[in-house]
Image (cartoon, rainbow, N blue to C red; front, side):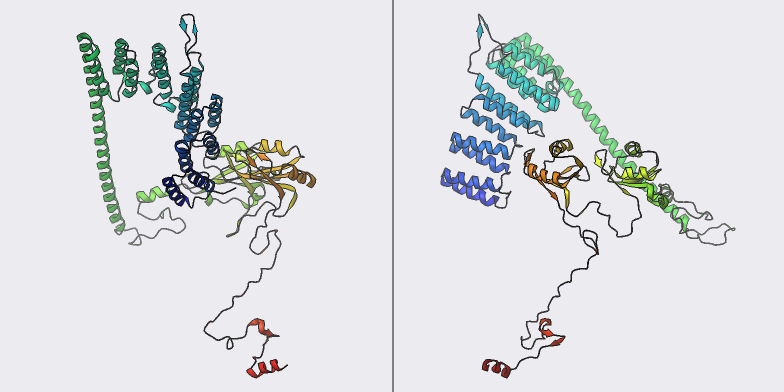
Length: 613
């Protein structure tokens, strides 16, 4: 398969634009196909290609085929799914195909609510087009309600899905409910429309937005019922806060056209109250802002004054330090330097007090590294690393307490009393120590921690590689696995071949699976059987690779990867070349020497003798 190659993206774009001006759809389509083959994850290129097919080509089989490939290559792009459903309805596919497309799109796990909202809205629009021209069934004199209609069920499912995933924030403007209410209005069912909108505006998130109230007003005006429209205006005036001027202007215009003098005066009174309430609220907000700015300015001035006072205090302290001591009991007129054994504290014989800076520095706790571990306790102490910085001694105790009695847990911290991500655990017996080593890579707070022997490390010494670098006929190397695969899934797949002695899923330091692992069986025959049966088998949409573990040797200084000593390979000596010296006068090469002596150079007469032979 072709890899991603976006190197010629601009060239492709220029070439495509040129061919589009020429007007040959076949050449343009061919160029688009080449471009998306070289760069199949380019969302902009796919979108441009699909628009061209929708607007110019308009061949059902071609258009729908390209859409099917697009959603497989860039399934995270919600706009492609939306256009796909539109194209399916444009070419009059059965509505079940659109429903299948909806279900496939919802499986992709979009990160934002806007993507889900766009897909649901397009699906509802397609559903509405499907149902709008079908007459509602009548039972006698009554007409069927939309309450149990498939379209209403689709609306309810969309609204419930958005609320479950994102809550009210998923649809901040209530677009799904408003669209459903408008459909009810077109169906000439104003009561259902009002019931939907009344439920929507019970939420504070929606009822404070003047623009949404005006949409309700516009829907009401379709039915030419001024009383209902007036009630909507009155509710809106009581609730809205973001743009009351919009409502006031439209409400007064409405009363001038549809109302009487009494309703006009009542509306004017309510609008004046709203104006007054809004002006008071804005005045309070302006006063709070002004006070906040004044407080910030006072803090800045106060901080500058404090800084000047501290500077003056430091200068006075420095002058006091530089003065010689006037105490007659002192033997020296100058202050002796602090002892090198403790730089944080001044000598007790000194008459000078610590400066605030020195006193603050001396209060810092000592780093845990200043307190070395007793080497005699190394055989029963493990070194634990790759810990989360939020891990505590209690977390370590809860993880290892089932092994036996723990003598001491020492989590190494910085001078700021923050964990440095490693520590030491001391046990009573050697058996408990060995049992702790077996827990290597146990997860603590979601991170695999590394457990090793506690031993003194020489400067420049690297950590020993604990895994074998030789071929292991009983162990498998399995790669190209999906990052979401679990240990239970792997054991379920490989456990049918034979008993699994060990399974090591290779992860990053943060605990994320890297896509490959090692499995050890009890015998070589079981391992080879697993290779034959499971190699190239698909798991999670990827064909995994299964092979006998044969890692490349790890080269170390002064030895081979297997740990045995070996002589360093002789380095090839570079031969200096002097282009200014004729070849006949150049010094003889090492290859021309025999037994340490250079060969004698041949004269012209020697060459002549060779030809006479």
